[in-house]
Length: 196
Image (cartoon, rainbow, N blue to C red; front, side):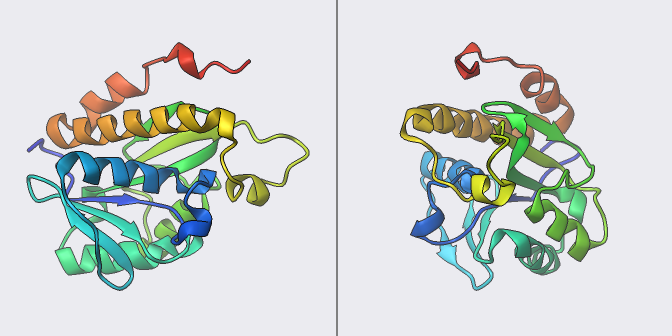
């Protein structure tokens, strides 16, 4: 395991079928791909649904709504005896263009309510996060309406492709560490994500 080993991958979203194909659930899409490829299933554990990836890393989807993600994060870290730096949060980011991935070792919430909740509950922003770009937000659409809006049919494949790349990135973090994954995925450009 890399020196900065991750013991928990916390993928953010909103529970229930109503939100399954909304932009805010990009983290959940990534979790489902990771679980599917590993052949593991999620089990209901109260504040979250959890699976264990090969190697013992916990893969988790909070059962709380996005803006209460910190409750699940705090409970998980306490239960597993992990520090915030051993948790990788995976979430959508409306400030990034559709398809872009940004992996960081720490930082602010950038307005993402799930990250903000985690920072508030843990009292620190010193934890890794992988953001999946879902922007740009049309100027006439309120941010809350956009992130809770359904992915348009013509963008479904691009959204799915981004989630697959995000799952690859998570696995790379687990196998090679944050620095190596940042160098590979933050700089990588996929022309299929160009708008127009």
